Image 1 (cartoon, helix red, strand yellow):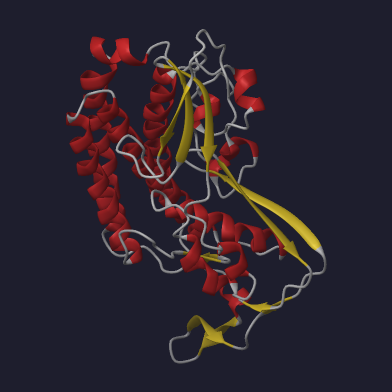
Image 2 (spheres, one colour; image 1 turned 180 degrees about the vertical axis):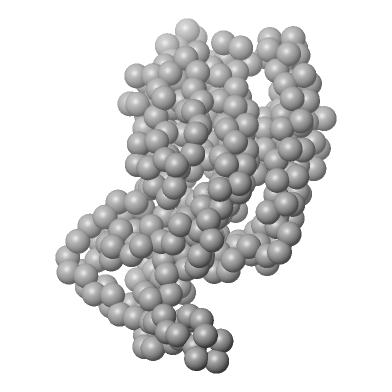
Length: 347
């Protein structure tokens, strides 16, 4: 990206890959005209660890612990796209209860990620207090994750055809309490941040990205929606059970830093709305498609009831096929392309 040059003496400055003002390992070669940035060349790849190559000789169940480390801010999304692809290829049905629990976990991940965006964003413009507030709220989300999955981060919770375990006793009430609490905190954020004249002066009209530019640059997620494009994969692709809940796409027209802040803040409120609906309407039934795992439903004469008993290892065979699975990740549309010449993996 370039802007017109006004002076003759340009200076190139190297920023990163480790720099106090950068959140993550990214290198920027910045060209300065005085104190104005006229050109910027981003250099990526410092976190490349060959995840694609590792996947070539792993079964899906073996590869899931790797994908949870793609993005530690919201690991549920990377797990979701990894299992959604084989489910679409194999026409594997996900039990309704498992789909609802997946939605709950995805929205909790969205909230946790948006909060960790908000804290450093406010610190960068000179407001340190919200940086500590967001970690207080994130700890509550991590408590819920730990109770349900056993891990505060890197959950390894999603499975092909469902999830790894059902929700523990008391988890639903604890999550509903968090929803009520968090809505009051969002109101506090609005009083502390949104209506602050100093904050508005520093973000309003800054970093404007128009809708056409956003599309041409391949932006997605809140970045795209803040530029006047109401595009949300939860509405477009209708994955999981999102079409069964009432919620609205949050978007803004201005395309500046304020618009991107407002989109994320509103999305957290919508996430709470979705979570509450999913918890209140959570259906019964199994949390995983046991038949695809090689289990069969049989009647137990001792209990006079049905149970799932192990029969054989399931084998999924698919001919040459390509699928594109994606989720509306908290910062972007996250695509996963799977090309299977012959998938013979024990599920």
